[in-house]
Image (cartoon, rainbow, N blue to C red; front, side, top):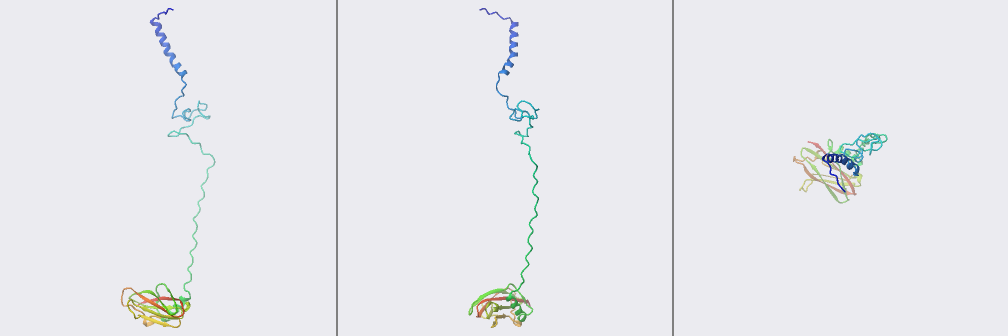
Length: 227
């Protein structure tokens, strides 16, 4: 078989034709999908805001991409729920009225003070001393200079009918004031015999309550007035 030798003119024509056909062959023969475009919605197949019917897009066209990529959340459906109305705070209950002051022991002590300690006022709270017949019990009360004092012990309402009351200075065996009563009411520092400490410093006195007859509770109240 004889091969005819091509002329230079024919060789140029064949080369140009081959270059024109090569892109078509490559385009038709490629089966790889187009690369994903991060700027396209729907996994890179549908560009944003594409018209309805665009290949790879859902019905209705493309969706605008949110900033930073990702998918656009579906719009909220249903009516908006109104927040619950604010409720007023609960109203505090009214303050409880204080109980009427003065039990039977307080009333009896005040009556004794009006008779044996006129002009004096109660100082501090009343002490309740438990005693047994024939025995004594002691408490401490602070007295100071510049005042005069009387101490009232009442046991008639508590079952103690005979009371001895002694007011003692620290380290002193003799009482600074005392009283004995068979009626259940004893007052140390009656009237002109009020207890008036000489020192300006507060001093704790020992108040000794002795039950001569009966057992129970003896109420002890301190009264004072300025000299």
